[in-house]
Image 1: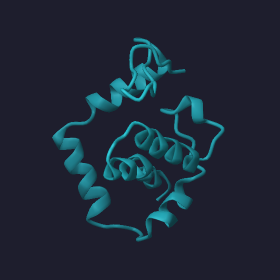
Image 2 (image 1 turned 60 degrees about the vertical axis):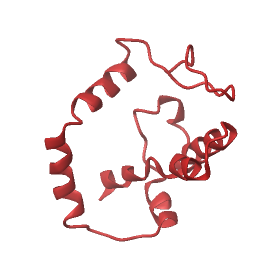
Image 3 (image 1 turned 90 degrees about the vertical axis):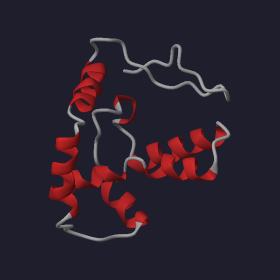
Length: 116
């Protein structure tokens, strides 16, 4: 599980960090190493050229709310909406602009693609 050592915002908010070699560290390392232009373009083709559904942001959050995300091990018993709200509140409490608060809320909405 993540710790917060060494990663603190000006507001005092502590960010998660992961010990090198931990399950979470390897998870993020793999995701980052696979984030190439070629992979991104392939995913755009797969998911954006032939959209299987359209929905409002509220419908999207409701749709992916029951997904369990292994990258958030401290949230495995919580609905996704809890994580979205916590991120938005963290952004607001950190003094970030309104657009950053909105991004904090919607940053994981792409998780709905695992259910499509």
